[in-house]
Image (cartoon, rainbow, N blue to C red; front, top):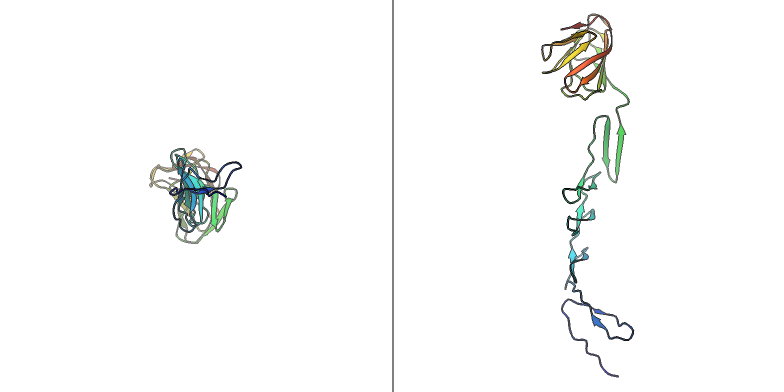
Length: 222
């Protein structure tokens, strides 16, 4: 039986014999060595190379199709695409009325805008927050301050229980009660006159103007 000389080819592999032909080296070349966990891919015509891996990663490609493994190093991260660049690891951002809780292999999204959180206000001063109700519960009275930022339709409720209350404003803000309007800015306010006075405020101009949708009592608007 005759011997078949196959020669040598750097970086190429000897392929199985196809019927009627002799074994032959591949056209593609391969790396002489690899490291643990590498992924082999073709990085040029007929050239195979190793792609370094990343712990807890996801395989994506860049703008020119070059593969890359992007690590997801934090709870709740996802691969987010972009028309301006390569996909990247990112987390979702919560907005008004929505909470996002990231945990290991899970993301919990909850709607919070449908109900009010209520605060028993017992201190002399109280910063207000949107979508929140306050029970004014201090015999010496409570001075509230409007939130500096609010979106159209955001609401605040205030119910009197003990003592008086007043609502202070930030720069550029105003409260409208029926046909009366408070002075714009920090000099304006709305205050109760009797125990048990109440007010329900709705933001009608983002960040600046609140209107009393309803109120109980004879309020003082300054």
